[in-house]
Amino acid sequence: MARTFIRGGTVVSATGSQLLDVLIDGETIAAVVRPGSTALGVDLAANAEVVIDATGKYVIPGGVDGHTHMQMPFGGTEASDTFETGTRAAVFGGTTTIVDFVVQTPGVRLQDALASWHDKASGRCAIDYGFHQIVGEVTDESLKGMAELVSEGVTSFKLFMAYPGVFYSDDGKILRAMQTGAELGALLMMHAENGIAIDVLVAQALRRGETAPYYHGVTRPWQLEEEATHRAIMLAQVTGAPLYIVHVSAKQALEQIAQARGNGHNVFGETCPQYLYLSLEEQLGAPGFEGAKWVCSTPLRARAEGHQDELWRYLRTGDVTTVATDHCPFCMKDQKERGIGDFSKIPNGIGGVEHRMDLMFQGVKDGRLALERWVDVCCTTPARMFGMYPRKGVISPGADADIVVYDPNGHTSIGVGKTHHMNMDYSAYEGFEIDGHVDTVLSRGRVVVDDGRYVGSAGHGRFVRRALSQNLI
Ligand code: URP
Ligand code: ZN
Ligand code: ZN
Image (cartoon, rainbow, N blue to C red; front, side, top):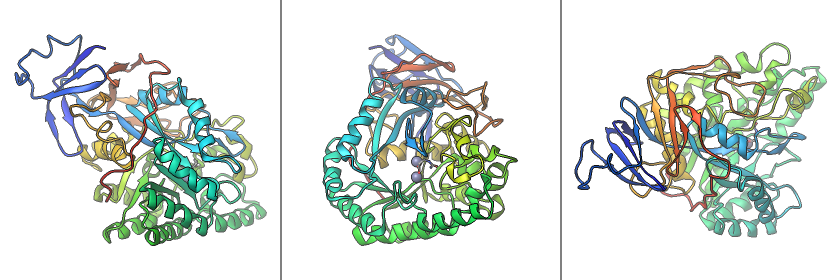
């Protein structure tokens, strides 16, 4: 495979930025050197088959999106991106690794669920991918299966305090899974919402004739996210399991996480761009059935209550550890439309795998986030958290050559008919204008996006066997 030389760019890592050239040999990074350096005793540019000029641009590790749901069966339908369409869209936006969730449905062994996800993904992905496992049924057999999955490179397990009758686990089951996680050194991931209480509020709202998408948000109040987050943290403390709370949207839930972290506990918070940018009033409250586009759980929160600003602040303090997308796309036609007249039937999920790096870079431009923190929360920490570092998430010798050349003076218009490659008939971020642009993307040394054009292929992406999480806290 070719030797590639990226010259003239500013390499941005989680800890600093420097003018550096990057030499890639085959699939991995061979050297990172000062411009004009003769340290290796050779003219690097002259010896490379491919030279990429990154002058005036940032050179960053490929994005790692630790939370996606390609082709996920949910709400009586299936998430609309396949592994092929979803990973292609991801790479357009500078993401070079995803970690998708395998779903265990009742009666199915974890190992068999994993095998079916391998079947869906294998030979179809444009970029590398790993798996988390959703434990939909905590039984003796599932707990034994967790150990087997860890040896297969699936080292994190998601449980749900929401969705009774679907994925829900009660506190006893959660405790047992956490005990097993602690024994294995595996990461426990939690959807923290009090689903039992939510279901009562949903039934009451529907009886009152409150059927519009807006009531999806109203019936999932922040108190029920805060309460579940607190409970999950306490259960994790009893067992000693490290705990990662997914898709946090309420500032009060983050306060719980921040407190636990302040007391030295292995608790981590993930948020998503939708919770930083969108709101209950503006999006879920859109006229008619429009709000269905933004029905997801946890829900978008009220801007009037200040959640979005607080989430940005917690990103700066480090209590939000990672930014993922929770990419779970559904089309309006035939999918979201299932909930016309009853918001509880709208499949829950927002698609955004294509836009995370851009949306978070806009946070840098807006002065909400440091440049290095952008790389940290979108690339380096997810790689570390999910046992892929230093192969992923960093530009250093020996790492996979997953690299994005990002133009801070470029421009990206988000929307259907613009930069939209996800298999959705709308964009959750329609009309957003970003002061930056993904120019070139390399996945394991191969150029897969060239000047904004896709030149990759389905099947290039490989399964990443993940180690246990490293250097937590
Ligand atoms: O609304 C969401 N978040 N859909 C995906 C499933 C989940 O809970 O992550
Ligand atoms: Zn969830
Ligand atoms: Zn999710």
